[in-house]
Amino acid sequence: MSLAEFALIDRILARTTARADVVLGIGDDAALLQPRAGEQLVITTDTLNSGVHFPVETPAYDIGWKTLAVNLSDLAAMGARPAWCTLALSLPDADADWIEAFADGFFALADEHDIVLVGGDTTRGPLSLSVTALGQVAPGQALRRDRAQLGDDIWVSGTLGDAAGALRLWQQNRLKVAVATLLSDDETLRERLLRPIPRVTLGLRLRAYAHAAVDISDGLLSDLGHIAARSGVRAEVEADALPISSALREQLGREGARDCALRGGDDYELCFTVAPSQRDAIHALSASLGLPLTRIGRIVEGEGVHCADADATDGGYQHFSERR
Image (tube, rainbow, N blue to C red; front, side, top):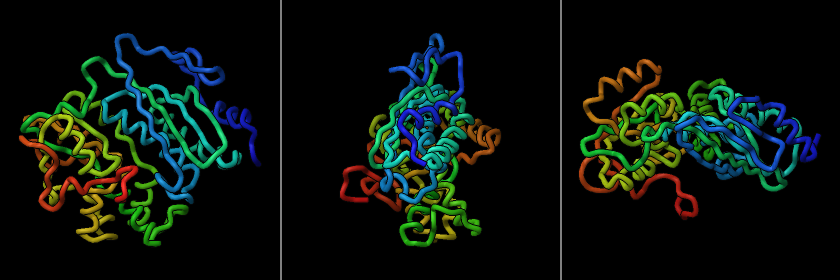
């Protein structure tokens, strides 16, 4: 069944929740929001296009999840607490079942992180989804890309390259993204591609330790390069220290897995720099969160990113580039 525009909006509105800091939400020309006293707003926008950011056969639930996850990951990288978001949907057809499944994925993640949908737009066109997410942070506490210090350790969360590995397997017709598989390694990689976990809690906790941070969306070399460029330093990465899952190694081998970890996008893990004196604190944080945090290098004088087995100029994904 295809929905009319206002029926589609009503379906989405029915999934939202009321909150005191939303003075006026969906239903008017714009939302009225009440930020916390003395806090700064953190705003980010991401757009996902079918066939560019996810395979066209990706299930609607997973599209809904990922549409919000990539924005929550940006807030996490800034150390911001999520608060509100808007959603713009371009749909070739407003199919009721697709909308319900999309909303299931979107709001499952929204509810988990206490972020409320307050507005947006719907239109007919190629499948494209855009979210603007807003968070809050106390003045001076936001994590930034331009604060790395000489001598800092470089750390990453989770494992790297899994999503890129899944995409590579899909491109080789070795993995189907539309259905779950009984093969544990394949399913591990498939879920990492379709349902990335934004490290919101980690970002909040890192405000006490990290000097600089970025989320890994376009590949470690590329995104760490942003920290190096903005901070005026050089990042040295130890390739053998990269946290790589057994599933990725099993499917792509040592070199293929390492390439995905260095250059692959869609991980949505955090990369951050911390003074060496805080190593014990970061290990304790890792244990308390039940999340691997791995030291992979250091910040030194110079510029760019250096890795013994890779050149930072041959980094991650870039839109409008001939290289993919």
